Amino acid sequence: MESPIREYLRRLRKALGLDADFSPRILVEIEDHLLEAAEGYLRGGLSQEDAEMLAVQNFGPPELVADALAEEPVDVQPSAGGTVLSYERATRKGGSAMVELELVGVRVVEGEGEPPQAHAGEDGGGQGRDAQEL
Amino acid sequence: MRKDPLKGQLELMLLAIFQQGPAHGYAVIQELLQRSDGAFDMAEGTVYPALHRLEAADLITSWWVEEAGRRRRLYKLTARGRKILDQQRQEWRDFSRAVDAVLRGA
Image (cartoon, rainbow over all chains, first blue to last red; front, side, top):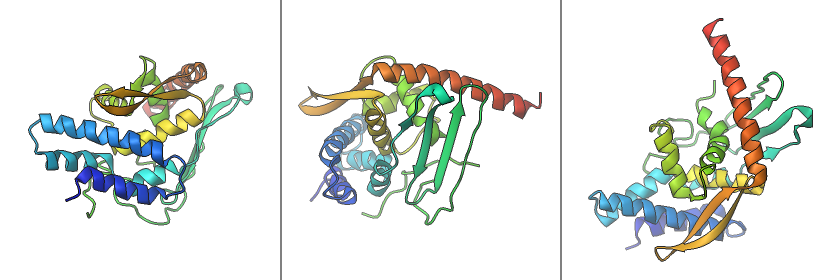
């Protein structure tokens, strides 16, 4: 039987798409993370299976991680105009939000788009903690 | 009102954590949890995309190491990341002070 971590990585690979050029590296990183987290839970007394399942649950749904990877990169602008760093995000499901912080005075521009579709745990405090249907 | 203020400030907090030295993703998440006294308990997987965004912006840099028989990606601040962190930290202080003053009704 496929272990929970193996299964998670397979689902994540699928969510990322085969042509995603960051997938090999991100998959190695995430595997290391999940194994380390599971080892911690194992030391805490959980079975191998339960430890892996908890590690996977705490990591969040593969679709959430894949969507986050598809977000706009951090945009760092020269500080001459006052704005040093602005974030603009347009995720497929979270609407968009733009925050600008200025050096002199503080201005916040925030626009929340209409979330086109709900995503499990996206806005909740316990996001990603919901067990996904496996 | 944004329900998830953490998301917008995650990059800044990650930069601040790297100020104490190189770390891998798992250690960064543990540090974030510890420093926030558990308040920033999020889907751990969302930290990796943030790390990749920071690296794409040349604010951190990363390399592979071999540890415990596994390949592990370590990250550290770049000179540019250090500069941006200093600026952003100051801006956040100014910003939170201003918001706080308004909320207090001073």
